[in-house]
Image (cartoon, rainbow, N blue to C red; front, side):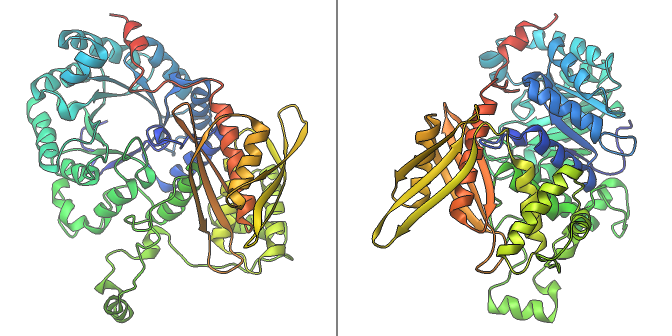
Length: 540
């Protein structure tokens, strides 16, 4: 692959770095659903996971490689540390994909070398070419990352990059791992690499960055001006700590300000050729899917995909928009697929009508999943007069998101009021198939439900977040509930939707408990923190 592909490649790491957001753990079905939507969105590379981390991650990457990878589809990539065991696991996981990549990394900053890896610069200079060559003998497409590059000595960075390219790396990634740098500094770093690495023309320069100081998107845009041609980002900007650079913000910045960025690609400012291959009309749908499945709610004032992004309350603004939308809107809402469409579906609608509308919304369900979705649709139609696209999306997203059902909610009933002590009666089926019932008091109906469930499950945890939002307008709207619980310093999320928010809360809490049980069967390895085993296992 040439150094400059003539446009910006979008490397989506929602399923890898994004999943490292506290409480955002995804199961295989959820990852597959997101990967399929990312392919429809038009991303160039999907970083599907960290195969060596756990059997679950390996299986998810392999399944995505089988189902989503294709000759016309995205490159399927797996992450690996610079060790033979990691790299081999990664190669095996991405093997089914026609277009596959191994993304291997090692830290290059002195603070990481001294305190985390306990290795010298000379050690790293020996490890990098050997591990890149090993990855190259397993797949044709190898990416190498200099972890914590933004805090690395540039002269040492140049040496590492030159060795990686000579060993076969076709993409070099420059991460701002801790979100420390500023746009000018990051632009200068990319420029310095282009000027001082002798064989840089043989690789594409990529950037990865976190948003700890709120500068990730600005850093990436400056990197593009200085020669970066691949952006590693996530949907809704999710990720560790303050998250990653947001895909939708980067893509739309390049779309709206194409005239400004065109000259950096050797084009005339007025050139209409897109700077990315992203199908922007899929952005809203992708954002909602990721938000629903991860349980991470998008803040209302979030750029591009927030609920208020196209809302106008000021009288002056409203007057201007009514006269000409360009007065206060620089993005046409339709460009990102935002519509207010409502569908004529109700309790008399048939299965084919529901299937057809779901396909229009981008959901390709199996026969079994369609039957489940249709059953939920009919149940909702009995309680809600008008069904909207958002209602259908909530039905399908909740259905896909369900974790392994170790515990199954069979009944929830509450009594509360101004003169009543909130009381909940809950029946739960345990993993052995036995049904048990508990009655508890609480400060409110949800608290009473949670207490009753805790008494049945007996897993000590702390409920750290409870949020509820309306899917659509109206008194009969679906209520979406997201719950997070903490167990041994780990967060687990649960999500559910129902016209009864107490029922939704109960199911969301059970989902969180099921995810807690499932994930703790085998704790995964963290790709950037648990490095001791990897480094000691390297073939030097």
